[in-house]
Image 1 (tube, rainbow, N blue to C red):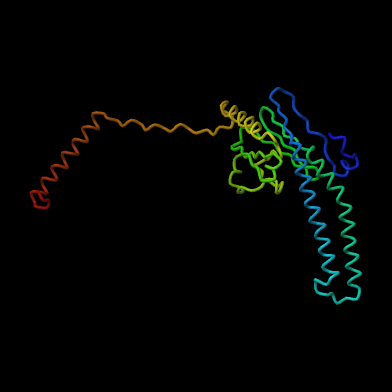
Image 2: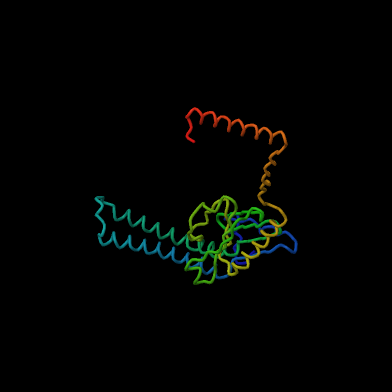
Length: 255
């Protein structure tokens, strides 16, 4: 993969090797856009800035007695030690999280074969998912304001049972997702990816793969119209007329 990834960091994170890409003319491999890395670094910077702001606010609030005074003789010393520990922890995590944010873009594969799609993403928490085209029901494109600024989008793929799992939300807010959905994150060609997936979905459905099998409705059996049945019906009609005449003669039925 990238020569910029330190070997010690890859060993520390236990990053697996690149996935095997099957051979064949139908195989397509898509990657996140370079702008996705810039977006990840922007988010990293915003998170670090919020931590720094919190540390500074806490320090100023305690030093200037904006918070209730702690009735403890060594309270200031304890607070100073805790504050210093927080600053050292922040300084230690900053370069590591920066490298993770930098490399996250490169450790993403979106592979489309002739029968299924395969997605692997993540550097610290690795997620890998495979979906067959025969089970795919919906493909949608999502773009939040930040993604629009960087010219990228997400492609969401859903299979049976995943359409009503969650409402519309920012797909980048969390990498947690249901078993019935997968995301192509931070791509700059979402329409192309959607069209390729839908073309292969239609190909499988035209071939009869994954189509729900609906039994043909049974046709009603023809009503028998034999001479015996017709004769019995005429006999019953004659008896009903005779009964009506008898009742009319007795005055029980109005004429």
